[in-house]
Amino acid sequence: MHAALNKYRCAFLLGLQSNVVYRWNFAIRSCFSFFQLAVVFVLWRAAYQSSPTMGGFGFAQTLTYFVTLIIVQFFIGAFNEDYQINEEIRNGLINQFLLKPINYFLYRFSIFTAARVVSGLVVLVPLAVAMPFLGHYLVLPHGAWRLALGFPAMAMGGLIQFTVAYCFGMLTFWFLEIQGFIILSMALESVLGGQMFPLDLLPAGAYRVIQYLPFYYQSYFPAAIFTGRISGWEALRHLPIQAAWALALFGLASLLWRRGLLRHTAVGG
Amino acid sequence: MTLRQYAAIWLASIRYTLVRTMMFRGDFLVWSLVELMWTSVNVMMILVIYQHTTSIAGWSEYQMLLLVGTAMLIQRLLMGFFWSSIFEMGRNVRTGDFDFVLAQPGNPLFMASTRKIDPDGLVNSVVTLGIVAYAAHHLGLHPGGVELALYGCLILSGLAVHYSILILTMSLAFWLRNAQGIEGSYFTLAEFGRLPREAFRGVTRILFVWLLPVVVVSNVPARTLLAGLRPGWVAWAAAMAVLWLSLAVFTFNRGLRRYASASS
Image 1 (cartoon, each protein chain N blue to C red):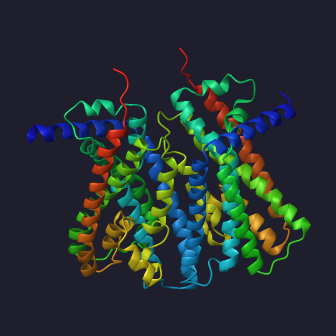
Image 2 (tube, chains in turn blue, orange):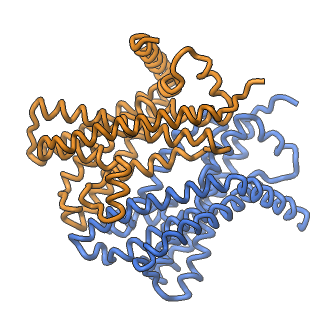
Image 3 (tube, each protein chain N blue to C red):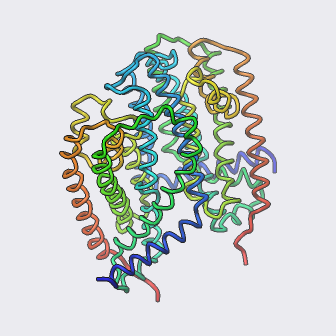
């Protein structure tokens, strides 16, 4: 057991090292995320001038939601894991994992976790810089239960995001070019995952349907718990659904891996 | 090389891309769907916000649709004509495949940015033009030939500015060891173009309206359709196009000096 864990610990440490090399990339991306926050700030401040509340929330609460969502994304979002898997399959680099006693999903997940530790810490730098300007707009609700439920939701959200990216990567066994599928999914995630607007602003019927889709649980759900957009009872009711999605997607990922390997041709020595 | 020869090269690239697109029709359909989806996402955001408010910085729902349509039209034209080539440029600089562009007997920036077009982006520019026409119809606008020609020229100057920003962004590949994902920065900046100028105040106004021109290049053509010609604004948009294009060419050439090549 210890030996099994040790190899993933090594993969995690390797991932940490290689991602620290690309810290400037993460730094630039996180700075641009705060530019995105400027878009959010300008747009929603202008929208709130004609209407002091939207869906029962004021401007400060909506801005807090978007700031939280960005931070959550840097800690648990899948950035380019699908492309990395795609390249490993296309270039035949995946062959080395077929000959070694290592689980490819866990290996990739260890690297993903390391990358998120680096990107999550890097995003705190522009956040600290922006705090003097943003600080007085942010209103986080009190209640330790929000942290107690929000962190598990965040961990499962990360697992869902990684598994979705892993599944897209697996599509390389069938399609050489998967970029179109990935960007299509990004467009869906941006709407159904609450990146364009808080989902509770949608008509009630549409919001109820979205609550049963996996996109809702990627980063909207933890961000909504932290920022008080959903109640404790609602959070408790949805945690099992989130866990069910994580399990279902893991099952799908395993299936795609097994079926994909049947189609895979390893060439060369 | 003469302008005529450059035009012939670009036309040959377009012909090659169209033949290739017809070979991979499924791919073309997926990418058209991708572009359509992103257009729908932006329109949907406007519709959702206007369910809870009546105005954004004094712009009504259909005025905002006209502005968002205009901003997306510029972006789709960029995606259609230049995106693939410039995106590949970043990757090729990293891998050393940029040698292939440098070995060609033409201006490297022209050669690198016109290797292929994206017909899906061009198809969706028609969709965004449809959004502009739909919004104009609801606003009861009836622009004459002069206004439409002016609108077209302003869209082209906007395209020049967006092209420059994308070149500046991807030129970072000459300085960074790994510029993967850096193209997302361009999309972030482009999002400002979908906001009304009046929504910016204080520091954001200085930064995003006057220093970074993405707001001006979408607001000026939209305003021209809504309220007619304002010479000062048109001059500003044209000056921005020249200035940013010069900056992009300068930065690209500076970056080119750092390119280490992959040849042995």
